[in-house]
Image (cartoon, rainbow, N blue to C red; front, side, top):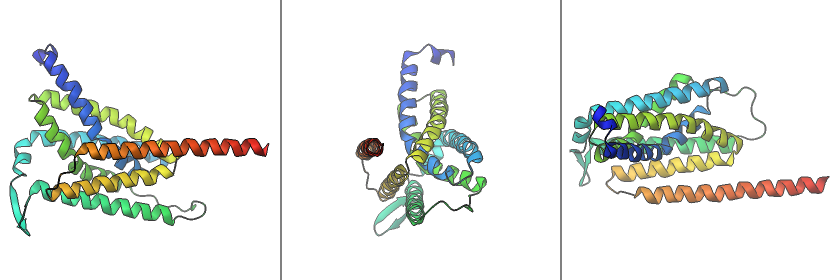
Length: 244
């Protein structure tokens, strides 16, 4: 361990791997921010922390079982001349779950009319945490394979995951607050999950969509939405000024 602390290459691997873990965890942050919104306000922070701590334990457990993970790439079955491995089936199931969840949430959001109902039904904490844990297994596969490819020291991989999860806990709270403040961002976030779900399904069917394309599309959409928010704020300020 002492040798790792004095090895510049180990520090470089740690910094790069931590940054990649955070970037690859953005989809987790969005998913968690939307899920915990179904809980009572006093339980939301607890669900965020528990969900991300479970994510950390899941990723470390996947690292421990990396030999088993690599075996998931071996074909399990053939459907219409397409060989499907265990990894493919996990990605397909996770992608379809994200698609179904996102479309359902968009439907519920658009169907809400008038003031918020006083008898709003809240989800159970255990159900939300379980959903976070399950989907994180799917969304963690890329980060685990990335960690193994970039670093050959288990300690570095674990430290990078722990640091990334700590950063993501802070990001999850900030993202949730931002989405709550600007409701249109919720639809945008759900659209991102549809994009991610579609990419997972495509990957499960052996059609790889470069992550750079996804991140560029998401970044461009966020930039456009930020411009719209600033424009709406400017127009509202002008209307208030005229009303005086």
